[in-house]
Image 1 (cartoon, rainbow, N blue to C red):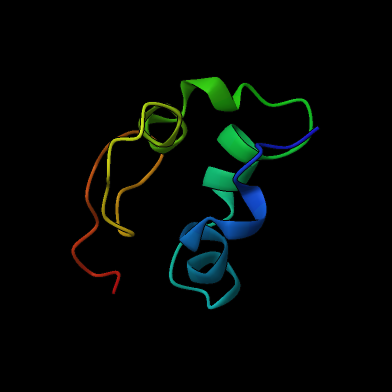
Image 2: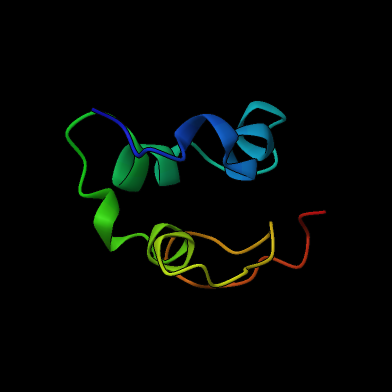
Length: 65
């Protein structure tokens, strides 16, 4: 099972475009991962808006747009 937001997460596009490493996917998003530790996931579940360039650990990557 993957995160319920996996298919709509903007990080997938950044990953496919080579802007970020697949480490985020491997650590937080994919099958059998603990995606509930993802800050983006927690904020989405709580209805808290967050920028597309926020990484799963909560840091903002200014190079992503």
